[in-house]
Image 1: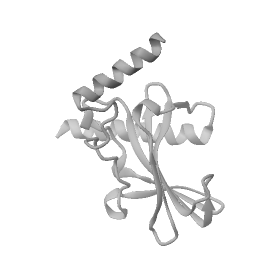
Image 2: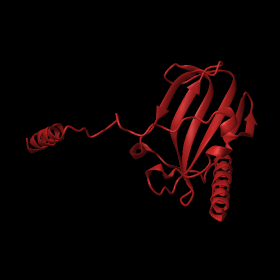
Image 3: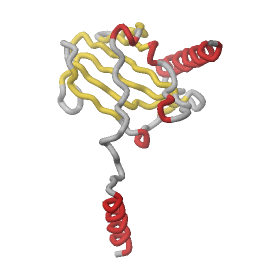
Image 4: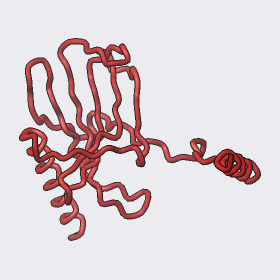
Length: 164
């Protein structure tokens, strides 16, 4: 009973303020996928049926919300054949934005955009910061290599920016 009363008071309090606990109307827009030229996409690797590129221009910190210890990067996986995700949507190219915690050797996928063979957006999913799930990269050699390279590039870019 007390929990229900508390929930009701909280809801009424928010309504009285004219607000909402999630202000999506005034929220900052998600980071868009970098375009081909502006993104400076560089080949990272190839596997059977897929080519993997990294946007060099996207590697860095995002200080729109104050100081940010994470390093962000966009990764593109271009498949030779159509793929189907778990929602049943067909796509040919997947863009994923990662947040890397270089100090803890952890990373999280924070956004994904899927495009069809013509380059048209099929769907996009963005994760709110409080929902990010960081995974250790130390157990996977391929991910550890990617992680190490991106963190190194971010440090070099930051050092070069501080010299100017």
